[in-house]
Length: 307
Image (cartoon, rainbow, N blue to C red; front, side, top):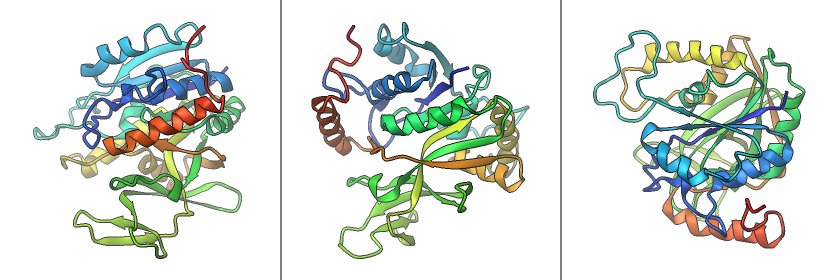
């Protein structure tokens, strides 16, 4: 069975100022998601599951309608703030959903085979999706040996503000040891070492990084058992942090918990893919330029879905 692609596209775009999931950054008005799905088809994925918010469903469906439905199966599921276990009381002042792992769980009723998870606003590159597809195509459906693709930290930063990244450590065999989420990473302005800082909410430096560290860009690979495992971890997370208005259940958090309990492992895969994305509006011109360059090099056709 070929793997599925779960696209996390429910983000609120608070730092970007718009629905960046369908922002037309391509030569012929394509979104970043278009390129991810195009690459996924090339490397062997046969299904895409969009995780979106109800209020943007019409816009998202209209944007992608007629593009690739004849090439792979397409499904839409909703990430909903109220999708919590049991009678858990949601803080009345909470607005945003519960994070990337909660978004992944929105697809729990739709996956029946190994699947990859990506962000809708990140460009991962075909080599990264290829190495993930190769791993998932050999993964038994009942396996708990999961995977992620690591990128170099200094190649994933924005020049226009802080970014959130999961700093990865692994053993000599390539199995994940930790993913530590740093929500405010920034390149230092002065040309000194170490060049990357992790900041707190007051812009004080918490930790320095060399920039060579592998990071998670939310390109993960799982098998169906992950959904039940993450559901249990979400219940535990809510008991600990559910009363906070801005707490988020990240995939790295859930994976760390499973690894610590001996319930799952994660292989850290590497590729030579170049990542780029749109965290801020100021990132957009660079993304447009890099996609145009890839088209001019012949990596992608323009328009992408012609024929």
